[in-house]
Image (cartoon, rainbow, N blue to C red; front, side, top):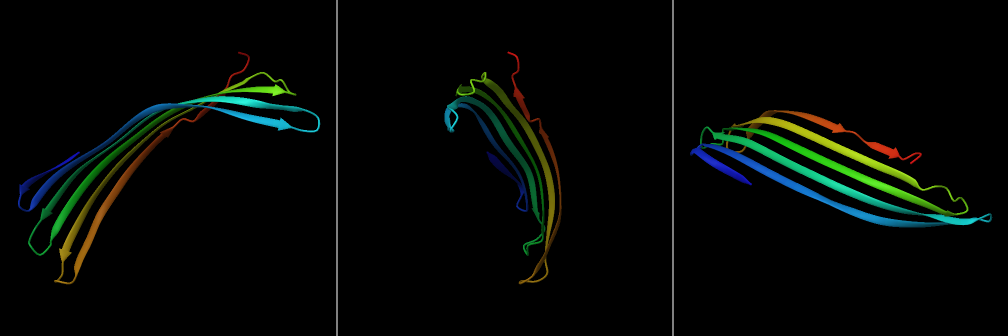
Length: 155
């Protein structure tokens, strides 16, 4: 989603927004057969993954043309936010030789990333075939990730 507003024939203001929201789940079953000279056995693992994702970006920009020869200044500020939360559960059943109790595990990975960036650009024409372009840019990124892998013990 975006819009431009023409303040004057030489000045334009613009805004942009982009959003993506998604959630879902997946399940699966894996079977592994283990055979050796001493024993035969294997394992079956059931897994379930629940995912929620939100990605959003916004932009504000200004463009001003000083003259018809191409002298101009532009300014942009952008912010993006990415949020991802996954929770996956595993239930592993051993059979055959070892007969170990079920192994129950959980993996939780919440992640948040924020990005703020700003830039200022100048264009100065020297003649019809050459121009100088220069600018400034700065950005700031914050990432928060808390990866957990847990195993259930004693019930």
